[in-house]
Every structure is written in structure tokens, then in C-alpha cells.
Length: 144
Length: 144
Image (cartoon, rainbow over the protein chains, first blue to last red):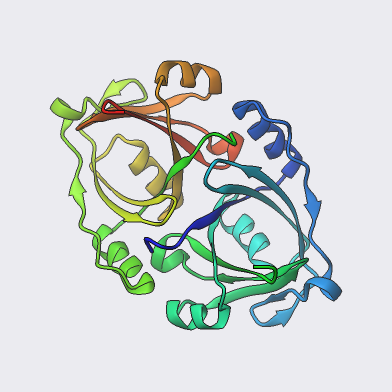
């Protein structure tokens, strides 16, 4: 863990425009722009092992040592929407790089809730909420 | 924000022994030891502006770029217990250094929910949950 960087803290929100504007106002930033994640054809999103059309709006705020990610779920069938319905707007996960994702998943031993691709990489969410108090995201950038 | 480090991610838990053991097991660490925060005479803890006897058990897990803090509330009258009762075990705040705490509080413009001292410094929790999706802790180490 001492050698592992936490790269992102992700907050699920119900209105990304509102939260992006609030972060900008409080911390005196330019309002971060959001983008919509790819559809199923490109992102290959799987939730609980099944293909899903769920997407999300994402916005990123760069701090010195970590990125804060705002996520607004779009559509049903994702851990994003699951979290929003269960908890309301709140921190959902912390992310770390996993150069060998399969090995890391096996080593950590947490259930995989959702996987997908993005331009340049792929991710897996692990269910850590009950055991650790927070879910874990593993990120693998192809370019690294 | 680009020049601001997020120094801690804090998770409120209901059983610090259980969660500390879980983090250790999942991430292959030695189980972090917890300690009890000081009582009111030393910590001068104020919750919503009033003195409180509330304390907490704290354990720290060091990642490469950030510290993960586990907090188990002890006694009534704290943001820790408030969060636990409202949300159950989950992420409560992210922390950042504030060399000039009064100025930072004024600049951010968020309500102060709790303040206190610890050996070597003091802290203030700001209510960010509704606006930002997470509370903010400001830390001021005397030694810095």
C-alpha cells in the first residue's frame, strides 16, 4: 500500500452541472467540463457480468496529488446508479492503477461489480463497501 | 486546487478493529493500530460551536500519495457520530492542509461543523456534503 498511489476519489452526483459549478465556486476554479462515457459498442460495459447500456457523465478536478472525479449516472444498470439510489450523492470509490488487472483482482479477492473500456484503457470496480467502507476501482492504461 | 494536496481520505466505521483488519487482509498489510483521540480538556472539541466530550478511535493506512483514515466515533455529539447514524460506514471527508485556517475557512465559505486540537496541530471540519458531495477537513500542523 505504501507503494500504491490512490489516483482518484470519485463522487457520485445527481446533477453534474450543479456539483461541477459548486466545486468551481468553492475552490475558485474554472468549472470543469463533463463528457459522456462511450456507449456499449465502444465501452463494452458489463454490470454484474451482463452487458449494459448504462453510461455516465464524468468531470475531473485536478488536485496536486490526486484527481477528484464527479460521476452522474445516465440510465439504469450500473454501480453508479446503484450507489446514487442507495446513498444519494456521496463518495463511491477510490481508484488505483493495476498494470496487471487480473492478478490484482485475484490478489485483492473482492467481487467485481462492473467493468468497461475507455479510450486508452479499461477499468474494473470492486465491491469494497461492506468490507472496507468504500468501493475500489482498478485502472489499466494501455499506454503505460 | 492544482497546488492543493488532498492529504487524507477518511472513512467513518462502526467497528475499527473489524475494518482495520479488513484493510490489512485485502491489501496485505500489517493491521494498523488505532488510538483514541484526546478528551475535551486536551482536544477542546467543539461540535456546532459547543464543547463536546465526543471522541473517536483513529487508524491510519499510508498509501503512496495519501493517507486513508479510519474513524470510529466514541460517544455522542460529533460529526463522526452524525455521519455514522445518517449514512452508516462510508467516506466522510477529504482533508487538506490550511496553513492559515481562518483565511481558508473564509475563502471556501462552507459552514464549520466541528473543530479540535491534537498533539501538534488543530483541525476544522467544513460541511461540504450537500454542495460538493463530501465534507472537507482543514488541517493545521503547528510544526510546519
